[in-house]
Length: 289
Image (cartoon, rainbow, N blue to C red):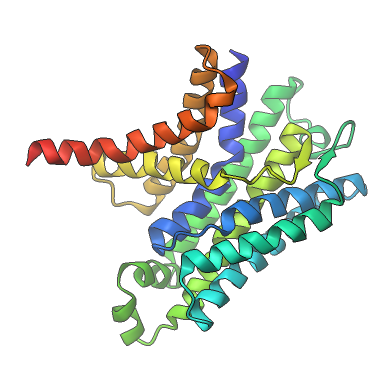
């Protein structure tokens, strides 16, 4: 049962990451690999500032700014230097490895007995329930802010940039600025996940972001499958399903461990699960035709 409780809490921690991937890959159609670096960046900044006895409330804006700068840099390389978005993300991610290692000062930074967001706020007496409610509040606030943004004129312009860049450019919208802003927002959310997960697990590690993009992508694919099944067009419901996807993805991994699959095989099981989600709708379409 502990597997599933931990998976639920991790799923909530990864919700911001899933929303970030949703913005970059589904709204802007940009495969942003900066995610691996910005996630670790958020964790590194959080870990170091916590060891320096900084308040989690002060760390939060610092993490958002750091992640936003990383995403904006990818956007600038892509739009101003006309470099492929995938390559731009890889270059920034590669550079962030050195930045993150410099910030941490070592490969692993333990946070044993260091006060965190989950220990400073006592909403209920049970530690797990306390963590759950803090994460739930975080997720609700983030989802509301992103949903509200996407419903504004600026958000509609962002969505239109991903749907039809030439059309929205003809209407006078600066699509380069939209892409830079969108990638900055996506990576700020990704860094926020790093902020949460480091405090949840009690350490920051230089390799914590390796392959993390598959977690966000898997969550978004689950959400997209549900959106297509139920023919959902509402922005709010789409964001909620992305959150559901993040939790479901972690619960599937927990189930995999619970039935006795070797932890060393977890990555390949994860890859297979994502492949299954991607492939099933396409196989169904082939059979129907």
